Length: 241
Image (tube, rainbow, N blue to C red; front, top):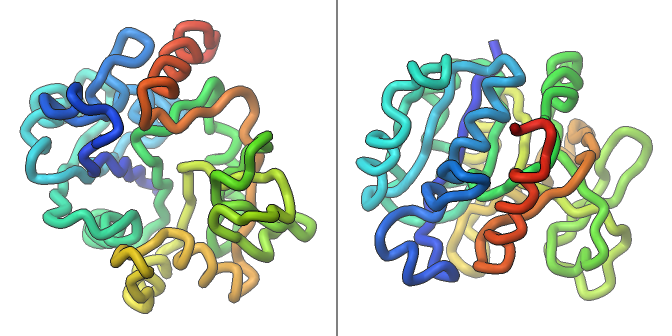
């Protein structure tokens, strides 16, 4: 059975002073706390066993807002990332929760106009490896950019000055059970973090990274401008009314 992981750490410095009070993932977007969107993405796709990874400062806030999951028709587990050492470091905390199964990972500040149901279906039909979601963007130099060959990704370049495509990697990742062995081989980047791109590149080297395309709008709600955009996306989306 596919399980879900929502990564909701970080301190949201670009959203100060709001995030001096609580996590950015609990700020209102579309008239609900932001993290509700990730929860609904998973539950509407049939995923009801969900891990929330956050930091020590906010774990109590998440538990107060989300509870055990009864109100959402799911079951929540919580893990604390003691130090901000990157997405792959946070994901490593999910190994026990995954119990040798496959997982879908959402970055809790990524807001989508449409459901990820089709991507979940495609991953469940996939025999092995990993899958990420891509979105065509007008400013790919701001993102991790994928080079494609058929149904596979053959390279990901982080924030390239001269992008080879306009396909940005968004914050939804699907992994088989080998992801945790891969994470153990990852070395810290120049900024001292364990990067999710290193994990995805390991799957590329094995020829096992497939992709799906995001339909509709997508935003990473990490700034005041993008938070406003995310709010409008959810208010105007027929999928989330």
